[in-house]
Amino acid sequence: MNKMAGSNLIQLSFALCFLLASLDASEGDADPIYKVCLEECEKSGCVGGKCFQHCKFSSDGKPIDVPWYLQEPLYQKWKQWDCGSDCRYYCMVAREEERQKLGGKPVKYHGKWPFKRVYAIQEPAAVAFSAITLALQFHGWITFLILLNYKLPLRPDKRPYYEYTGLWHIYASLAMNFWFWSAICHSRDVELTEKLDYSAAVALIGFSFILTILRAFDVRDEALRVMVAAPLIASVTTHILYLNFYKLDYGNTFLTNRYPPGKIINILLASPLGPCINVTSHPSRWKVWLFNVGGILAVLLEIYDFPPYKGFLDAHALWHVANIPLAYICWSFVRDDTEFRTLTLLKKIK
Ligand SMILES: [Zn+2]
Image 1 (cartoon, rainbow, N blue to C red):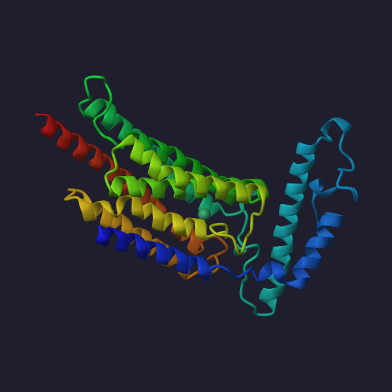
Image 2 (cartoon, rainbow, N blue to C red):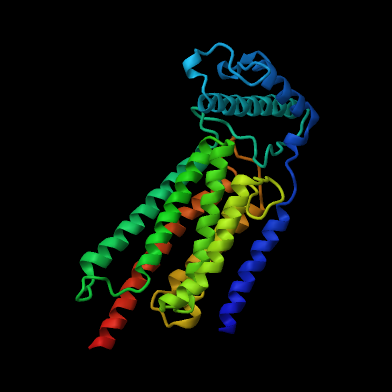
């Protein structure tokens, strides 16, 4: 037990270190020239010689030359999002070109490095890697379902023997939800997609933490599970409500900086599997080790936070690359765990 507590404590202290390291605001968007460019663009709809169709607003925020039937709030909002996003991007490109000419190094804007867009996708590398991880999460979940329902024996009432089935189903849904919104958010970063991405991240982290405790301490009693989960679900829900309805803070809020969700997810995702190795003589404990070490190395990648290579591949994109094998290892362990627990229970029955 002490060993387990120690392992979780180390992971928690790691998470806090990364949080503290990420409290700085972005240099790029604090730059007065960039700010002026943004203000002017939002008024005129132009940066340099480039003008954007969807920036045509009157002073009260209503679109100027759009038919009356299209002038409803959602459409208007979408236009404003598009306008804001284009203004930020082209002001950033213009400012970065100026900086480069003066021999300056790239700086971050709104918590992100200056990336090159591909077909209006803001961070194509992160989108592609998120999509692959999403596909692997889905594959992992499907193979888990097949193993559970078709390859392993079922109880007389047709329920699986494995006691953590429902919990892994919830985990799969939350993980797929997170990777989906991660891909969307990296392709178009507006307030709505960012809120959805952060909310999905917080939900996944929160549930991973619950799963950690339940699996590590082998909690099988339903009442005890509810007792453990209830306070954690309450705090996760509160945090999601805070993000969505109070403040989506880039700099100072727990979990809401552009990158810490990923970092903390990595650490906490490691933990559902981590403590198992301390309590059981699990035949697949090496996968847990591999997952934990891989997860920590992936996080270390992000500490060395370098600007995107050729405008595409930054440390965060590499963190996304690292998540591809990690997703595979995670589900591989879950399948092994399913088999291991089912066979152990069958032996007991016999
Ligand atoms: Zn990401």
